[in-house]
Length: 113
Length: 115
Image 1 (cartoon, rainbow over the protein chains, first blue to last red):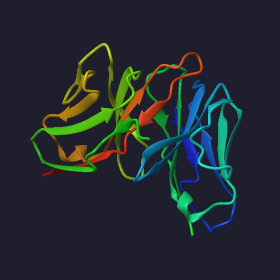
Image 2 (image 1 turned 90 degrees about the vertical axis):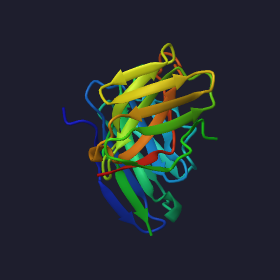
Image 3 (image 1 turned 135 degrees about the vertical axis):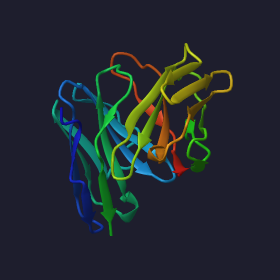
């Protein structure tokens, strides 16, 4: 199993541009989570899906952030327009519903200049 | 508000000695706890877990202790090895039913094991 696959690994973009982060969960996992890692807040949950349906998006910081999961094998996190304060490492993780623990991807390091 | 707190951002320990990483939580509904380990440029990986029905869980050099009354857990690494140098995240969860459960993470503790 290739694990949770995230792309790109690194993204540098200019303020105001649209950024799309991608995630492929582990096959058979039906819960998917997007986290953002910052020094101040550690790993902060942005949104999670169960069976492709968004369950809790209360962690999404602003309307500039949106996430979709069109099918069981793909999810995107979009920031439009991006701002320098969005610079962070974004992780995707997946699990079996009710499972004890997640498998994380390697993350996307986003830098907005 | 941080429901899971790791108040020590960093810790340095001599190789062969014990490393103790601490974690506090505020939500009394949390019933399952995990420790994750993270190396630079990699995603966090699962290390060890404990359910609220237990107060100790051991896996090799790693032991997690849970004190429910104090809402505190700790990770002990004995003996510490240079390869243990990483960021350690504590996470906690409360079962929320058929739609799954989410874990709340602390801010992490960066452990450095000095050879």
